[in-house]
Length: 184
Image 1 (tube, rainbow, N blue to C red):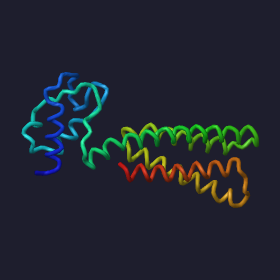
Image 2 (spheres, rainbow, N blue to C red; image 1 turned 90 degrees about the vertical axis):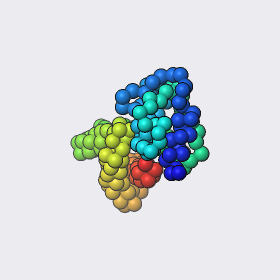
Image 3 (cartoon, rainbow, N blue to C red; image 1 turned 135 degrees about the vertical axis):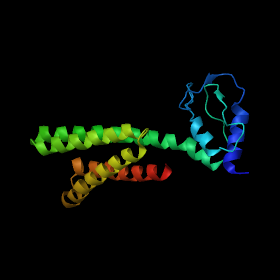
Image 4 (cartoon, rainbow, N blue to C red; image 1 turned 180 degrees about the vertical axis):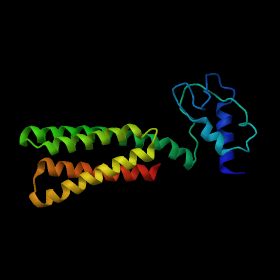
């Protein structure tokens, strides 16, 4: 028996015949768990119980199965949630930094580049839940560009603001984007 079949059987065993909120046509629970049933059905097409069965859910989290695949499934949203929050904060700080550069030094390029980079980071954060590849690519690209701008300038001048702060935030952004990509 394949592992997908066993996962499907264990899932059905826990969920079939439970009263609760039915799943919508796209295969997601309309309750609080938002568990993607279609993804599981696609992995176990040979399961006679899953074929043509409408599964019910009591509006709770999916059962805890002791499989690597389900563990990865349960951990991925936490990583993406943290990445989304980080890139939103990083984007806002980048916009604010560009505005401060404009107000203090009259640098229009700081305002424009900070705004563009910040908006792209916030956009990437909001793309993560639905367009994971695009969101991570944008976040990684902007983080690399910002690191390429601020790290050499930090080495040259040794200034903490904004060079050190933006260098650290950029490196964290690069690491986080790569880790989120590897975890997907």
